[in-house]
Every structure is written in C-alpha cells, then in structure tokens.
Image (cartoon, rainbow, N blue to C red; front, side, top):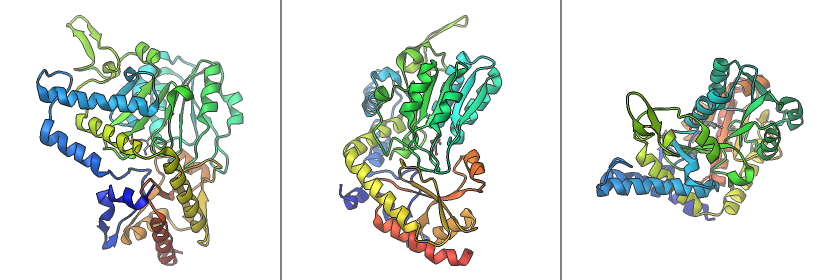
Length: 404
Ligand code: PLP
C-alpha cells in the first residue's frame, strides 16, 4: 500500500491550520473523507436527489437502488447472512438506543442484569442505564487491569442466569484495546444472554465477520469509516430482529395503518421509520468500496507499524505516561505528560496545526478508574504516515517546556 497515493485521495489533508500543514491525528473521533465519497454525495444531489422506496419515477428508483446497494455492501462487509439483518440508523448511538429500547424493553424484568465493560463509551452505558432504571434491572461491569485489558476471568462470576444482555465494545476508543469479544460472546450464550458489540472503533481497523463471531447485534458509525456523519448500521440476527417490536413509528416502517390498528413492515424496514439519510447511506456504500480497494493485511500492517513507531517515539519524552498498553491494541495512544493538563497540550498542538483529542473521550468511568481528568489521544488511520508522528513528537517537544 502506497501511503502517498492513499493521502492523495483525501483533499482535506492538504489544508493548513493556523498557518501550518494539517497533521490530523483525531481519527478515532472521525475520519476524513476520500474524494470518491465526496463525489458520491455531490452526484446524488446534482443528478438524482429523490426520496426512496415510494416513487415509481426514475430518480426515485435510482436513489432506492443506490441506497439498497449500500445495504448489500454492508452485508458483505460484515459477512451477515442476509440484507434483512442490516438496519440503517443515524450512527452507533442510535443503534444502541434502538436495541436498548426495543429488545431491552421487551425482555428485561426486575432483577435481570445487563453486563457492560469498564471500557465503554457513554453511548454504550447511558441507554442501558435508562432502560435498566425503567425495567428495574441492574448494570454490572467487567473490570479491566492496569494495561487496559478486560479481566475475563471475572466472567464466571459476572455472567449468571440473571444476565440477559451483554454490551461491550470491540475496540476501546480511549485506550485502543482490542477486546476478546469471541470469548465474551461464547460465555454469554452459555446462559442465553444476547450480545451487542459496539464496533464504532473497529470497522476501519480490522475485518469483522458477524457469523464467525456469532454476536447477536453489531453496530458502527459511517463517519469513523471514511463515510459521512449521521449514518450508521445496526446488524442483528434475523430471528431476533423479527421478534423485536419497532422503536420509532412513522412512514416506511408500516405495512397497513388504520386508526384501530397498525401492522408493521418486514425487516429491515420495520426499524427504519421516516425518510432515511439517503445521501449518507449511499455515500457509506462508497466508503466501504473505498476500504474494499485495499487489503486488510496491508491496512493492519501499516497501522500496526505506525502505532509501534508512535509509541516508541512518545516514550522518548520525559515524564510521558501512556494509558492503555494492552498486548492486543490498535491505532490509539492516550497519554499524559507530568502534571500538564490535556487541554493545554491540545491547544498548543493546535497552534502548530496538529489535531489530537483531549479530555475524557466520552469514557468518564474509565478516566475515574485511572484517577485522571482525561488524556491527550492521538489516533491513526490508513492515511497517516511517519511524518505525522514526527510532527507530533517535535510539536510536543516544542510545547511541553511551556507547560512543565
Ligand atoms: N462507541 C464508541 C466506542 C465510540 O468511539 C463512539 C464515538 O466516538 C461511539 C460509540 C458513538 O458513535 P456516534 O457518536 O457516531 O454515534
């Protein structure tokens, strides 16, 4: 894989910020978009903007076909059995809420338990807290060790007959840990609990096979996968989705409506009320085609090498501590230097055109565990190169003396 060629696909990478060439290291928050995704958005609005599924006219049929083509691309990307199992949502957050409010509300009883991990994003905590409060169920947490790895030996105490749902991330957005979700799924299935995997940070960094994993739900956001914001996917096993009640009511999701009774549309439309983000869904398909044009071996090798280089170089800086040193991790390095505040570091790096994330990264319980206010997080993607890392390191060496 020629990184210089890859970089040429991303117009934004040639921007300057505060008079300096942009160094974009905030990919875990959102990725930049390749030209083909931008062109797909432009082409939709310029040549076939139209509503989907309802029209018999040519534009509507073209838009419907393009959007349904994305559904098939996602099916194949996740290796799901059928396109009926692929639901368009507005993102990971919406997908998790859908499962909590449809599946969770249906099955949870007082005394039941929902098992999360200590590494979860707020999106995979708060919807469960809300539904557990409503249903009288309890949340339990899989702990993690100092390296940021889940302590799976605890599962024998945590997964019991009371466990109805397990919801964990595939990759931690704050620490980069790749969780052993296969083991978690196997253990949960031994007590018939259903498992939701939050794949927001995973899909751009490793291949996902929902059939091999045997997860019940898997969700991700388009914007972390070189696609647009405001779109995401919920995968669910067909028999589970079939038995779930709809979450949103409205157009598209119905089969027949009278004032006495409404019957619902079949999968996947049962969960897709209202006009979807048509252009976003179409462009998500283009983003997947972009990713499919590279081999996973090349992507993984490139990101692993760069992660190692970034880690080694960061550790040359005095008083720098990395949070998250799991044996199995990817593309994210969270760190603090001495007693500097992450925001101060982030603001000074920005003056040099370097974009990193600072703060709690929507994982407040994780930060509380480490007893820190947050971290500086540099996160990598397919288009980052050694020069980006070098710029970060020299930026840190330049700015830190002002703070320490
Ligand atoms: N889960 C994880 C692990 C994330 O990193 C994020 C976003 O940062 C989310 C969920 C929420 O994704 P979105 O805001 O796209 O719905």
